Amino acid sequence: MNADPNNTTTAAACGMSRAHPNGPRSFWLSLASALLAVTAAVLAVPHSAYAEDAHAQDMQSAPSFVDNFSNFDRSRWYVSDGWSNGNHQNCIWSKDLVRLSDGVLSLGFEKRKLKDREFACAELQTKQRYGYGVYEARMKTDTGSGLNAAFFTYIGPQDKKPWDEIDFEVLTKDPSKVQVNSYIQGKPKNGKLVDVEGGADKGFNDYGFVWEKDRLRWYVNGKLVNEVTNPDELPTNPQKIFFSLWGSDKLTNWMGAFADPGRKVTMQVKRVAFTALGQPCQFPESLACTITNSN
Image 1 (cartoon, one colour):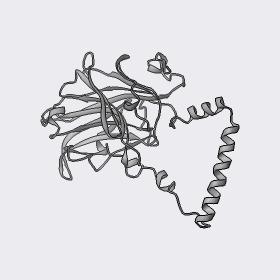
Image 2 (cartoon, rainbow, N blue to C red):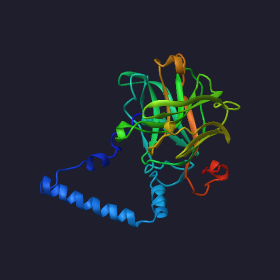
Image 3 (spheres, one colour):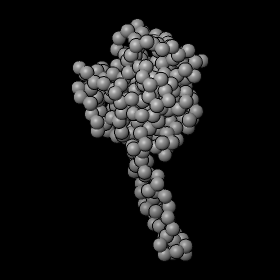
Image 4 (tube, one colour):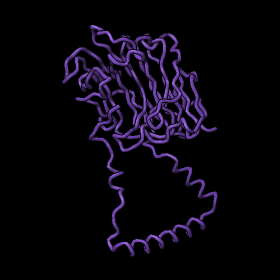
């Protein structure tokens, strides 16, 4: 999942240590004084207050939002355009394939030569990063072997962070199911194929996950379909929210043998929302209205 090179943060570069202007000896004297001051301050803070502050710093996050796509919010979304995510992908991202009409966001896949690929496909991502909370999307997919319609969160090396990811992926060779999984430090975890009652392609379905510090749960149409509590299998970095529709003629064991659909294939999204933990639910059907987020 390539991040927009123009949206990556420079925080890590700005935070690089530099030599102290007064030389090594002054630097170490300053450091010793600072450490003594910090130690004294920590000892002076009551334990309960320290614990509260530590909990508050667990995860930074952009604020809650609901997007019903009554308009396209360019301050929220970046549309991928002009590259692919690697040789496994048989298409190039094209901004022309992200469209908005009557409150429905559409992502397309079609036969159109771009650069070295024979097909064009679509992806968009948030410009901000989100932490613990409830993530929800109401969407409908198409059909076709060798295609992937996804709603997921991701952060990675392009953003100077480890690769963390939480996924819903409809492999449209079989739209009766959706694959849920996550990546921790770039390693796949918690993969599971679950049923989508009625089919992901027959109507709009609600996909959501609840991400907490010590638990991650996936839901399809309000039904719990997977849960993880192993701390080694939980993401620890704030992530961007993505939608994508793409194809591959190489990942045949996973996505099926690619076949030119002979038409434009679409994925449609009616709503996406993020509700931070502890915040009130933002619409009546939200998981945040019914799911207890704390243990």
